[in-house]
Length: 80
Image (cartoon, rainbow, N blue to C red; front, side, top):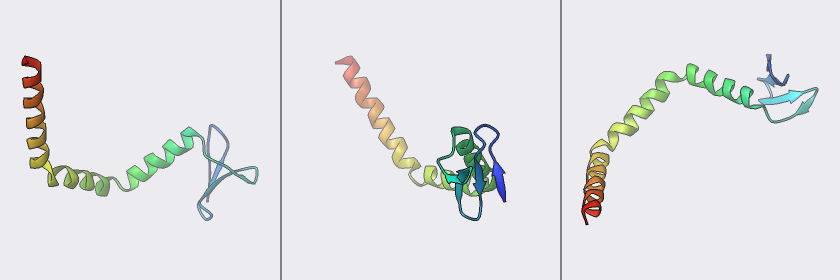
């Protein structure tokens, strides 16, 4: 299935996995890349968000402790 970009006219060939324009394989334009990213995000939204949540909460206590110490060190530097 070929999907054509409305901006640059390149076509995405799902079978080969490449963008091509007039039979020449080329890099997609910015709009094509953003479309592909948004389609991927929409198709895999739940798994992406779950991975972000687990990464955040795995080190949540360590991150809080690090930032607390960082703020304390900045406060002592400001008063010195």
